[in-house]
Each structure stands twice: as structure tokens, then as C-alpha cells.
Length: 109
Image (tube, rainbow, N blue to C red; front, top):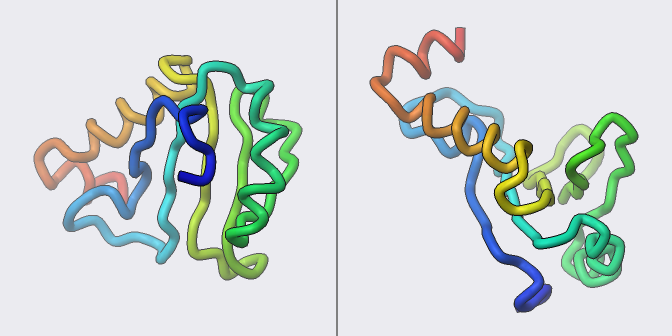
């Protein structure tokens, strides 16, 4: 594996992870690490498989990488500390949308 044992969790999130929900054609993956400071060492290996690091100053508790042309991305990679509020909130929201289908449809509208 590219990042080896530095990854302690990986989950599919956002709209493409919800069965039956209309979604943009972008896969969103959240990766959990023990220490967010490690992520700087991920930039080169991830670039070798076409993930570009995108510095987003508003993302204090996660780092963001994307694959694909700007505005035409195919995959977004969000890296945060495992079991942080960022990790928990993203998974809780995904799991909430996986409840009865009417919830996901309300979100989509």
C-alpha cells in the first residue's frame, strides 16, 4: 500500500456513498491518521498516483487532495486525525443520510 501503516482508517463519504442519492461524479474518501502533521510526507507519494495536494487554509483539521483536472475532478481525498471531530462528523452525516431514503431525498433537494 502506498502509505502503508500510516493510515488507520478509510471510509467512503458524501453523496456517492449513499445508495439512491443523486450525486456529482466525484468519489470522496476520508482517511484517518494518528497525527495530521504526518500528511506533509504523503504529498509526494500521492502525487505519483495523480493526487494533487490543495492547500485550503479554511481546512484546519483536515488536508485535501484531488484527482483529475480542476473543476473536473474524479476523486477527493480528505485526510484527518482518526476519531477527531472532523472524522466523526463526516461519518455521522453519511450514516444519517443512509437512514430511510426520504432523508437523502430531502438533502438532495
